[in-house]
Image (cartoon, rainbow over all chains, first blue to last red; front, top):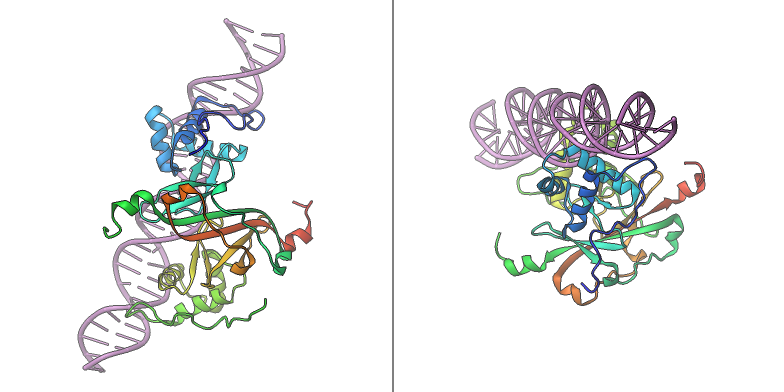
Length: 148
Length: 148
DNA sequence: ACACATTCTTAGAATCGTTCTACAATGCGT
DNA sequence: ACGCATTGTAGAACGATTCTAAGAATGTGT
């Protein structure tokens, strides 16, 4: 990593009108912002409960939806069966390890610009392109291509 | 379309040993191969039932899994909430319309090569890159940018 | 500080998409 | 035609997510 972002800084201090940043919500956001890999709901709930065992499943689900709508976090669908959550809202792509299932960010500057071209493009009004790489992470390559 | 593939040709006439291409399975495959957009399970079941109303939900689910394992079709996760199915197994990307939810193929030659670069790439052993574009399809642009 | 309206958290029920189970029906090799 | 593995069906079961109802907490105006 060349830059060191503050994991606890709130990128968008605005929630929809009337909605409050409660301790539970702050806890969910902070927990997610501190997670290196992008947890799914079950993992996030477990991590959050280490700090507040009384928080309910519904509160975490409600909170991630609220935070996603507000633009504080990203909901990642399609990286596997479950929805994963990502506190990094800067433009970036994702890498999934086929062996261990871990999901990592790929900084946007690590890949060249993706550009659609061709005559058929008249049919598309593209405003976002998501890139998802799959393969083996460093650790799984080391630990044993022959194992399993 | 510049090329005109035969929708009813079977790309891989091999199923796992002992598994038969039954009328129900052929119907599911043919229906999917004839669908312009990539249906989810519910849509596919409805389309299949127009030709065979007695086919069961489980049969369609079992069949798409079998066909996917055999490489006849692709399971598309992450384009929305539900899994969608695609009889086009050639390399290509996908476009999702934010307005109507339709999913279309983007031929691989319509975009430039995606290439990872940078020193951090030592950590990734990428073997596949999926690209997903989002925006508005031709029809939804025409029908009304202001009409939500 | 008090009353009030709004928002929040909680536990459990409900829902949605998908998979599993049990059993009858089918089809292939002999 | 017989035996046996494979298949199709309906419905139950399952896991992830969302909804509901009720009470608790918060903020505001006085």
